[in-house]
Length: 40
Image (cartoon, rainbow, N blue to C red):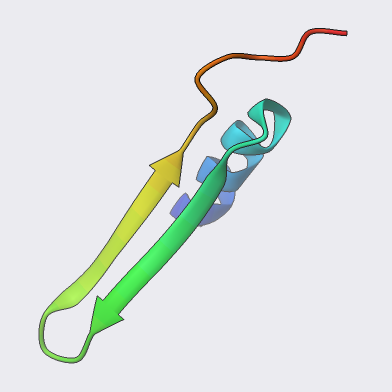
């Protein structure tokens, strides 16, 4: 549920979520947002 909330938050800003994981080491989630917004 936590990642779904993050996705709903970053989608309007054209951001992305990337995940990296390794067995026994866990997972890292990278949230990226654009530096500037394109306002319509």
